[in-house]
Length: 173
Image 1 (cartoon, one colour):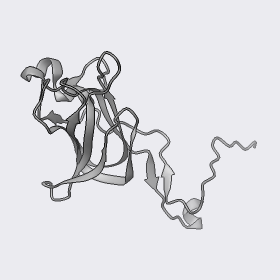
Image 2 (image 1 turned 90 degrees about the horizontal axis):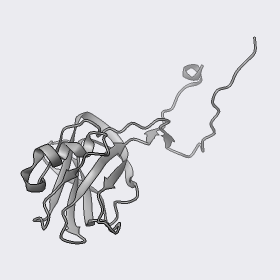
Image 3 (image 1 turned 45 degrees about the horizontal axis):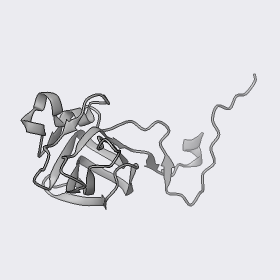
Image 4 (image 1 turned 180 degrees about the horizontal axis):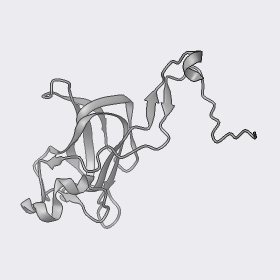
């Protein structure tokens, strides 16, 4: 019988994380809320549009908003993740609307929000400093580049790495 090899991978034995082959957007379809919605128009600019998987719908906050503004995603169960991607609606010249933000996760007590990552640029994927486990994540927008309120086509959360598990020779066979 001929033998076949479909995949062959080599990993550094000192690494503690392995890649996830097909990351899934954990935020897609999750209950989502925001502290501000454009003119209260939930039909057109609902927070849920930021996690619906459709890049033709969007969440939008009011212009000249009172800061901070939050967008919160509540997972259906505890999730593990390490990457956030935000597809932001920008100004006509391509300028981003957000000047400063903090990503937070909900603590085990279900009350306390813990800072995970702060920054000024959401145009690149936001790589968290470690694998994070939580039942919710939120972005806290603390500064804007102009009068326009923040608006997202999509807010996506992924697990791109997984913890290395030790297996015995018998388990490998």
